[in-house]
Image (cartoon, rainbow, N blue to C red; front, side, top):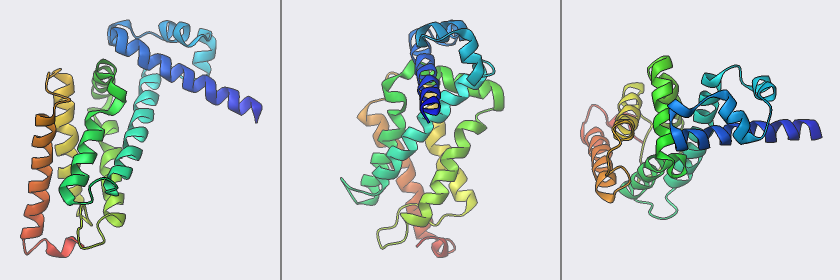
Length: 206
């Protein structure tokens, strides 16, 4: 167990060092040697856990996505504002502020993932999360996300992540602004309202 704990800590240190390197210098500065030096480990130790820098980027992406989705899950419970709009706003705010404010690191991760698989690795966990959330959050009078059809899950997840991704990649100055948040909330609320208003779709909404 102590050995496992040390290994877990080493991996965490390497992934955090990768985030710091990406935030400071972007992909141009991102090398396994730089990450190993920042993490305080040998390059051999780094390669024990990560085959190359692409694997390291994917590990960072998974860490940040898991943390963001955990925060989104809490937001969707409506502890602050239980209304549909309130929960959607909390979800949007969490996604927009993912990576703990490290906008340059997030841009670098998105760029790297897009070059590998076109963004599927980034979108798939969000779509899966929305589908699961529909089973737990949508079953009461003030329903939110579901249950949704697979097509509706696709549209919601790609609409949210696509807009945020574009703002990150384009380094839009309004990324963290309330106005930008308002527009994303408007987009998602309008779509969900349209589903509820469509008689052919009512059977899919709790």
